[in-house]
Image 1 (tube, rainbow, N blue to C red):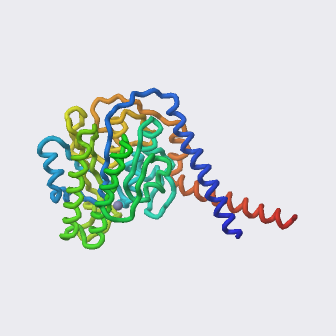
Image 2: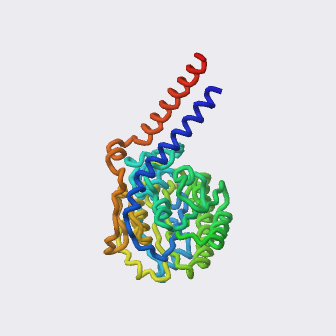
Image 3: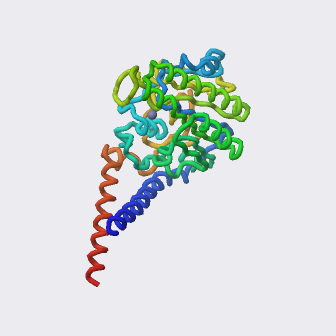
Length: 336
Ligand SMILES: [Zn+2]
């Protein structure tokens, strides 16, 4: 019983404090006026897709060849793991600032992600993807579908969400490429096949959304070693694609670049939707000449940036308080 009380107190305090930290940062948004666009964004995060596997994806290659899309060579950072990758891409902050260093670190992000920034700016947000996104960004999605397996379901559910709710920003997150990489290696026919499958699904999705004002962004959290696996600074884990597709790609004013990084995705999306950025985004927007409101949200650098282990300290602090309160509670109960 005592341990249950303690867990209950821990979770309550944790979410209260977390809520407070996020809200304090978002308060700055109240004082900003910005112009909402009618552009919509669909991001397909293909888990574990390395840069050179684009060759297995004829639809994407075609879009690039026919100038409906632009391919950037992009870079992930070590640790080339999923959860740290998701956090880097969608908060635009490096790992040494956001503190999400491991896959098994189920702590919500202390930095507002682009979905939350979009939601607070009046856009509708949605997810068809792995449940880790909910652990990381618990308040960010208006509509969501989470899964454990099966890419076709992920895409068909994404299409259902589009038809039903018409979201302004949607994340689609297929996982089977990563699974094939782990099981058979990135040089295997299974890996190739899963890339082809995702490509087919992306084509299907694009046909469904291209006349609905969507810009499609395809990228990945990390690559895979030849023999399968990821996590370190291996070049095959670092190098990932970033593809931006639009009916009128010229209009987006994208900067041509040899190399970009995972951290450039968040500020680019902020500029595309014309929403404020958080102050932890260290990447560069790929949109040319956009002097968009780059807002330093209130509780900026000082607390989190000064201490790289902020999330860890935050969790320990919460644990300490919950233990103390439980002890006190039982002590007082025994007295009576
Ligand atoms: Zn991953």
